[in-house]
Length: 449
Image 1: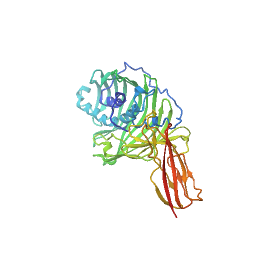
Image 2: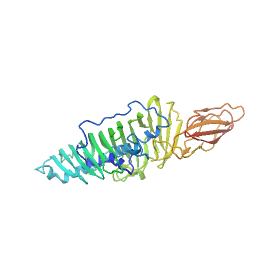
Image 3: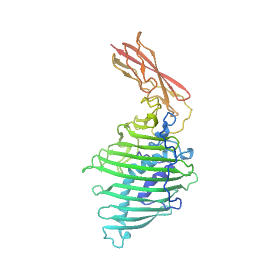
Image 4: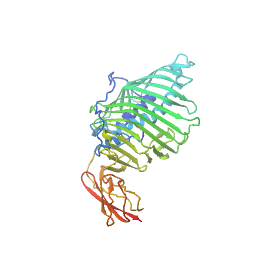
């Protein structure tokens, strides 16, 4: 559902699932059996903590790890499959298919004037192999059902084999787009032909893309629903996406200036198990993150959220956009709804692996002044670690007015609170630790009578 520029052929392998299927550049079944792809990983709720938070954060937003360096299908591939297959490519490229049918009606039937066209077409892939379309397509309503078979289709050093079905359920002539499309396939296989960038991935999925609109098309909504399994034939690992729904709402159809995204569903990680993911409030995107021509999200959210992942015993991971450059990742490792671990990192720098090359830097937030009787909430969320490790938080009251018994609530979380019981000055110290080293910072709360 969230799209960004692709930089590796591992990512391409999954992003082309939608692109090849919808535009007719996919492959047959010399690399695949008749059985559906199966999820073989951990099926228990994930025991979330600061060590695996990055692995799940990466399932929605691209990280920096590569498939060749991981025992599982890495999160960069998951992001590509979700963003490119689900969010927008599915629907937008269906328009290309319908136009191809229109332009080649004479090849689909002996009688080019037929309202219902019998489709039986073979197309050649850019670098060899072919894809065949068969089924029926209504020339007036633009609706129909097609079967697609891909035989050794090669494009950009990727060979694709398998078959799929495409149902065109609804069409809006006003915008010349199909507004309800379902794509299903049991087993599509993607094999790299580049020895420097090897991968061998099988994908099975049922995907439905919808456009939800008013008569004036404002606001303009794209919805994608997905159930998918991805299997890495090299490692034997697999990932599953279940009951996943993404709604992306653009402020207007023509040259949108903003968008929001709501997502929910269940994500399975081969090693760690599953989490349920949901946006608390919609993620917000500025015009710079939107491809206005295709209505695709090409950048990161800059506000809204958070996006929350929930695992076993109410343990959670929380992703909160800071701006279009930074995101705060936090973990509640004991399920008490207080986040003990966090880090603010650049979008695209989320990763599974943890290293120790730099010390953390504590940031206890700015000094503040409140009135006696008010509660002050502290904020250590801008503490950093150049290695992007999640850090834990320990707050202590180091100085307070004589006779004060005020203490911290949630002293081991990112945002503890204190309710002063006397006027005067309160000094609080934040200590952060990245698993190796510690740094401290202080903040002063001045309490007026």
